[in-house]
Length: 144
Image 1: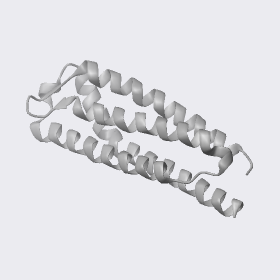
Image 2: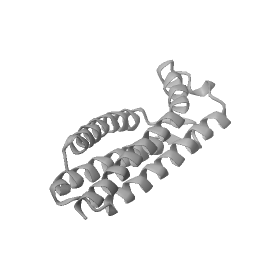
Image 3: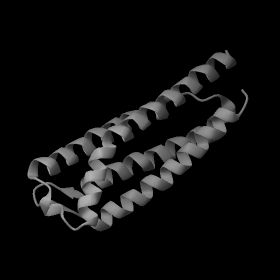
Image 4: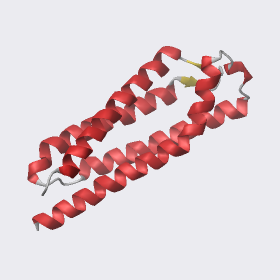
Protein backbone atom coordinates (compact mmCIF):
# COMPACT_ATOMS: atom_id res chain seq x y z
CA UNK A 1 0.00 0.00 0.00
CA UNK A 2 2.83 2.41 0.84
CA UNK A 3 4.44 1.98 -2.59
CA UNK A 4 1.10 2.54 -4.30
CA UNK A 5 0.45 5.73 -2.30
CA UNK A 6 3.93 7.00 -3.11
CA UNK A 7 3.47 6.15 -6.78
CA UNK A 8 0.14 8.01 -6.99
CA UNK A 9 1.58 10.90 -5.00
CA UNK A 10 4.66 11.17 -7.21
CA UNK A 11 2.66 10.89 -10.43
CA UNK A 12 0.21 13.56 -9.28
CA UNK A 13 3.04 15.93 -8.33
CA UNK A 14 4.75 15.34 -11.67
CA UNK A 15 1.53 15.92 -13.59
CA UNK A 16 0.76 19.08 -11.63
CA UNK A 17 4.20 20.53 -12.30
CA UNK A 18 4.02 19.53 -15.97
CA UNK A 19 0.58 21.14 -16.27
CA UNK A 20 1.87 24.27 -14.53
CA UNK A 21 4.78 24.48 -16.97
CA UNK A 22 2.37 24.08 -19.90
CA UNK A 23 0.28 27.02 -18.66
CA UNK A 24 3.43 29.09 -18.18
CA UNK A 25 4.48 28.35 -21.78
CA UNK A 26 1.00 29.30 -23.02
CA UNK A 27 1.11 32.60 -21.13
CA UNK A 28 4.68 33.55 -21.98
CA UNK A 29 3.91 35.35 -25.29
CA UNK A 30 1.20 37.42 -23.59
CA UNK A 31 3.46 38.27 -20.66
CA UNK A 32 6.35 39.15 -22.98
CA UNK A 33 4.16 41.45 -25.07
CA UNK A 34 2.76 43.20 -21.99
CA UNK A 35 6.13 43.49 -20.25
CA UNK A 36 7.78 44.93 -23.36
CA UNK A 37 5.03 47.55 -23.67
CA UNK A 38 5.35 48.40 -19.99
CA UNK A 39 9.14 48.74 -20.10
CA UNK A 40 8.97 50.92 -23.21
CA UNK A 41 6.18 52.99 -21.62
CA UNK A 42 4.00 52.12 -24.62
CA UNK A 43 0.96 50.49 -23.04
CA UNK A 44 -1.20 52.87 -25.05
CA UNK A 45 0.22 51.28 -28.21
CA UNK A 46 -1.36 47.94 -27.31
CA UNK A 47 -4.74 47.68 -28.96
CA UNK A 48 -7.82 47.33 -26.78
CA UNK A 49 -8.25 43.80 -28.16
CA UNK A 50 -4.63 42.88 -27.35
CA UNK A 51 -4.93 44.24 -23.82
CA UNK A 52 -8.21 42.39 -23.27
CA UNK A 53 -6.68 39.19 -24.67
CA UNK A 54 -3.73 39.47 -22.31
CA UNK A 55 -5.97 39.99 -19.30
CA UNK A 56 -8.27 37.16 -20.39
CA UNK A 57 -5.38 34.74 -20.94
CA UNK A 58 -3.86 35.70 -17.59
CA UNK A 59 -7.19 35.02 -15.89
CA UNK A 60 -7.58 31.68 -17.66
CA UNK A 61 -4.09 30.65 -16.59
CA UNK A 62 -4.71 31.79 -13.03
CA UNK A 63 -7.94 29.81 -12.91
CA UNK A 64 -6.01 26.73 -13.99
CA UNK A 65 -3.37 27.34 -11.31
CA UNK A 66 -6.13 27.63 -8.71
CA UNK A 67 -7.53 24.27 -9.91
CA UNK A 68 -4.10 22.66 -9.59
CA UNK A 69 -3.78 24.12 -6.11
CA UNK A 70 -7.09 22.52 -5.11
CA UNK A 71 -5.80 19.16 -6.38
CA UNK A 72 -2.64 19.58 -4.32
CA UNK A 73 -4.68 20.42 -1.23
CA UNK A 74 -6.69 17.20 -1.62
CA UNK A 75 -3.68 15.03 -2.46
CA UNK A 76 -2.87 12.49 0.21
CA UNK A 77 0.83 12.49 0.93
CA UNK A 78 2.76 9.58 2.39
CA UNK A 79 3.36 10.21 6.10
CA UNK A 80 7.02 11.06 5.59
CA UNK A 81 6.08 13.91 3.20
CA UNK A 82 3.21 15.48 5.13
CA UNK A 83 5.26 18.48 6.26
CA UNK A 84 6.71 19.05 2.80
CA UNK A 85 3.23 18.59 1.31
CA UNK A 86 1.84 21.34 3.55
CA UNK A 87 4.74 23.58 2.55
CA UNK A 88 4.18 22.75 -1.11
CA UNK A 89 0.47 23.58 -0.89
CA UNK A 90 1.32 26.84 0.86
CA UNK A 91 3.91 27.79 -1.78
CA UNK A 92 1.59 26.88 -4.63
CA UNK A 93 -1.20 28.88 -3.00
CA UNK A 94 1.12 31.90 -2.83
CA UNK A 95 2.02 31.36 -6.49
CA UNK A 96 -1.61 31.11 -7.63
CA UNK A 97 -2.59 34.16 -5.58
CA UNK A 98 0.34 36.13 -6.99
CA UNK A 99 -0.83 35.22 -10.48
CA UNK A 100 -4.29 36.50 -9.58
CA UNK A 101 -2.74 39.69 -8.22
CA UNK A 102 -0.89 40.18 -11.51
CA UNK A 103 -4.09 39.63 -13.45
CA UNK A 104 -5.91 42.05 -11.15
CA UNK A 105 -3.22 44.68 -11.75
CA UNK A 106 -4.47 44.98 -15.34
CA UNK A 107 -7.30 47.47 -15.70
CA UNK A 108 -8.95 46.70 -19.03
CA UNK A 109 -11.41 49.59 -18.75
CA UNK A 110 -8.69 52.21 -18.27
CA UNK A 111 -6.11 50.32 -20.37
CA UNK A 112 -3.60 50.61 -17.52
CA UNK A 113 -1.43 48.46 -15.31
CA UNK A 114 -0.86 49.08 -11.62
CA UNK A 115 2.94 48.86 -11.87
CA UNK A 116 3.48 48.43 -8.14
CA UNK A 117 1.03 45.52 -7.86
CA UNK A 118 2.38 43.98 -11.06
CA UNK A 119 5.98 44.15 -9.82
CA UNK A 120 5.05 42.71 -6.41
CA UNK A 121 3.16 39.90 -8.12
CA UNK A 122 6.23 39.11 -10.24
CA UNK A 123 8.42 38.95 -7.15
CA UNK A 124 5.93 36.80 -5.26
CA UNK A 125 5.54 34.43 -8.22
CA UNK A 126 9.29 33.99 -8.61
CA UNK A 127 9.87 33.37 -4.91
CA UNK A 128 6.97 30.92 -4.68
CA UNK A 129 8.06 29.03 -7.79
CA UNK A 130 11.61 28.74 -6.47
CA UNK A 131 10.16 27.24 -3.27
CA UNK A 132 7.87 24.89 -5.23
CA UNK A 133 10.74 23.63 -7.39
CA UNK A 134 12.92 23.07 -4.33
CA UNK A 135 10.18 21.16 -2.50
CA UNK A 136 9.35 19.01 -5.54
CA UNK A 137 13.02 18.19 -6.07
CA UNK A 138 13.39 17.26 -2.42
CA UNK A 139 10.30 15.04 -2.45
CA UNK A 140 11.17 13.35 -5.73
CA UNK A 141 14.77 12.68 -4.76
CA UNK A 142 13.80 10.98 -1.51
CA UNK A 143 13.47 7.22 -1.74
CA UNK A 144 10.11 6.03 -0.51
